[in-house]
Image (cartoon, rainbow, N blue to C red; front, side, top):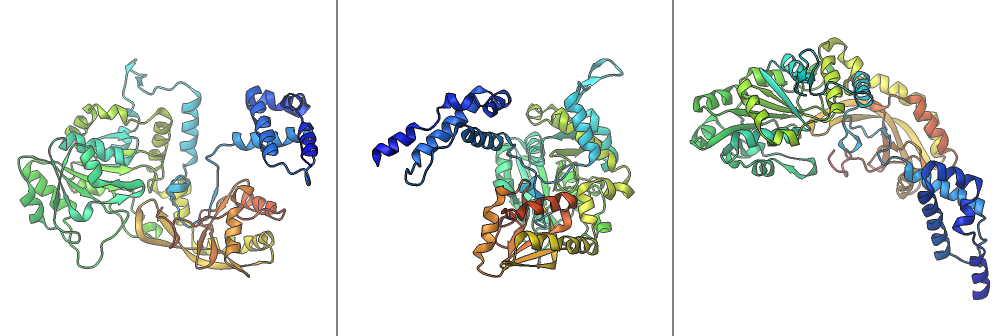
Length: 483
C-alpha cells in the first residue's frame, strides 16, 4: 500500500508542468509568475498532506490549473466586499456607515483621476488652504463664524480639547462621559488630549451650580457632550447649551459642545424624534461645536469643527491639525455632500441615508410581497417564509431609542434552529452576501435599505444551485453587538 501511495504521489504533476498549460499561461500574465507558481505549489502541498490512495486519483495538470485559477481569483477579490444590508440598521458601522450621494461619488472620482487645486488658490496664483473648499459651506449651513475639518469626530474632539485645555482642566457632567464603539471613551480622549478631567454632577442629574463651583483659574474648557448613543431616562436634569454658554462666558472659559452624530436639518419631517442641530448649538452660544460627517449627515468619514473665529484659528495653529487632516478624495466628496444641503426640499431624493429613512412601511411591505416567492424558492422547503413588520434603527450611535416602522421577510426553520446557522455558514457562497439578522429563532430580512431589487433577485437565483442565504447575528439583534 505504501509503495502504491508513493507511485501515485509521484504521478502528481510538477509545478513546472502545470505552468506550461494554456490556462496557467493566462494566469501568469494576469497575476504574475510568482503568485501563480505559489498557488500551484500550495495546492500540491495540500494534496500531499491529505492524500488517501484508496480513494484518490491524482489530478491532471489542467485540473490543478483550474483550481489555482479559483484560488487566485478568490485572493484577488477585495476583502471589502459589497453586501446587501438587510439588518434593519440604516447607518451600520460594520457595513461602512453612510452611503454617498452620486454627486459626492463623482467628485471623489474626479479628484482621484486628475490633478486638483487642493492647496492652490487658482485666482491669486499662490498657495491656498485645503479647508477653504468647505469652510464657507460649513459656515453657511451652521451659522458659525469659522470652520475647519479633520478626519473624524473623535479627532475633532481630541484636537479641540488639546488646543483649549492641554495642561488645564476640562469640566464635564458625569452623565455625559460617554463610551462609543471601538472602546472610544471620553475620559480616555481627554487624557490623551492633555486635559485634566473634572467631573461634575451625578450620572442622572447635573445643575448649573455644579459647573459654577468647579470653575477655577485652571479651567480650560467646559465640555458638553450630546449623548447620541444612549439616553438616561426618569429622574434627570441637565444644563442646556444656552445656560451653560452663559456660565462659560461669565468665567471667560470656552464652551465645547460635542454633538457626535450632528445633524444639519430638522429630522421630524422624516418621522424621527427631534435632534439638536448644529445651527442651534451655535446659536445657543457654544464657542465651538464638533460633529461627524458619515452618520446622519450622510457623507464620508470626517470630523467638523465650527464656532468662534478666534477659537477655530487657535485650533488650526495646533501642530496636531496636520496629522488629522483629510485627503483630497474625501474633501471633494464632503464638499459635494454639503452642497446638497442648500436645497433641503430635495435632500431626501439625493442623499441615500435620508432616502432610506424616508421610505414608507407600505412601500417596503409591497417590495417584500414581490420578493417573497423568490426567497421561498431559493431557501427550499425546509423553511417557512412570511412577510413581517419590523423596526429599523438609525445605527452608528445615533438616536438610540428611535426606530422607524419597516417590513421584510421572516424565515423560520421547520426543523432545528441550527438549520438557520447553516444558511449563515454559506455566506461566502453568495457573490454579494445578503446580511440579515437572527432574532427570536428567525432570520429577518429587513428591506428598508434594499435599493437594487433586480440585483438581489439575481443573487437569489444562485441559491437554487446549492448556495444559501448568508446571514450574521446582526448588530441590531438582541443578542448581537451594538452597531
